[in-house]
Image 1 (cartoon, helix red, strand yellow):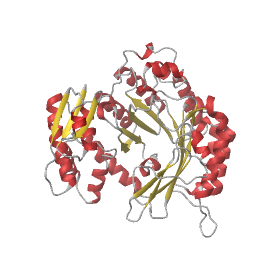
Image 2: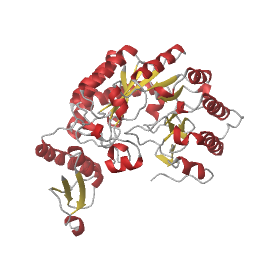
Image 3: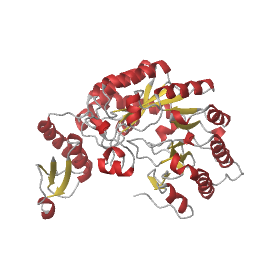
Image 4: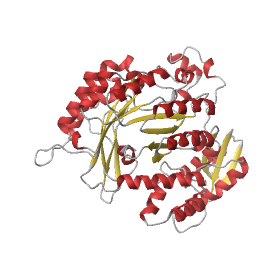
Length: 474
């Protein structure tokens, strides 16, 4: 269906589009100003008229507009959105700010219910995350000189069906890995300054992500960490994480390399323990590989292991998710990150059959036919209950566009096992020094406003443009 939203004047288009799209996730939604003859002439199956209310502030006008539009959309569709009118990626920003103002839980809940029409369940989750964030961050002396360090490794054993991260399959691009590391070291050299007395800068947290960092060989991982240690005092960081991620990339030798460099937190990410789904999404590993990799990590002394799962994968419903959660219960990881599938335009999930076949990504499309991408309140609630049964608390939360069920991604962890970097990447508390293809740097300007810059996402472009100035991200 083609849905048009006709607005009295050109304003709040993004917020209107996001809200209408949440009610009509599978339809074409366009927003245009009244009087735009070209756009008004386009054929549409449904047109919604919207007027901007007069208010003294833009925020008040926007909130009022979204509440009024939400009520109409709810009446038209019979749907309620779990997060109400909230469309931003950080719903916990609201309770966090109110907690700093000294508001009580009851006052925060009343504000979020009345102003944003969020459900009691999501309000409670947001407050709980905000309280845990506050606890975790208390006592850390953030300031203009503090920073966290991120390195990006853009290689994976294979590219998952839903993936849009900056990553390349090792079987095609692995030959560039050594050149990539050299480029990464040169970038660090350009932007790293030793302290006045010659000491290495100390990051608050250190994180290697991807891609799959452990797609590199053990010797390449060793070199990456050793060269980083020449430039930064990693031993003094509050935490050191490597996103091992894919179980088929984890070996005992690589784990020992990580351990020898003081890495104290890793991820072993199954996404699902259902073999049919793993095959379908292109993971190229088995559920048994996940169990073996996790066991190896425990044998090698890792006492802070995260696991990621994704809800809403093709063909999965409560039964399949229950199987995954049962396996998680038996393994007892130290943290569990529960993702809701977000179907993005750049992923293979959104390509046509013709594109898939011509690219050689698949030989037979029949396995995708008739599959649903389903996430719901009961499914995500079941995952959250599993995390809390294991003694974990929710400590960070964010949302993305086009998330199935209009839900969220939430990180749970045992007390003391949280990932500080996961919180800091969402907050504007300190600089994020990020290196590598697609890495997003964040520097705080006077007044605390973040200025972001991004590296070229494409691997070859990053290598070719290594000596060019990095352009701001729009």
